[in-house]
Length: 94
Image (cartoon, rainbow, N blue to C red; front, side):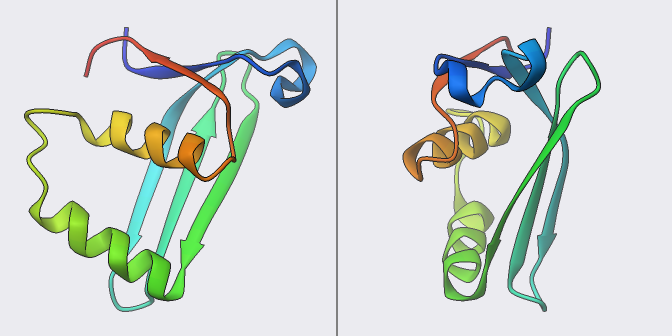
């Protein structure tokens, strides 16, 4: 199983969906933008974006981070949770 986020807050579970995995991650250096698309097993999608200085700062960190310690997907889920977009826990393996 790939890494996924298991939602803990019922108001975030759309139509019985309680988990999402990363379907697409777009890193746009020139446009200073990060787009994240999450999909559920039921085919539902949620999209989150970071733009401007926030995206630039995140891109700089991602460019030099050691992904052997914590996967890129886990880092994305952790950031979405830290920013209050999602509440849950990450499970699965990279």
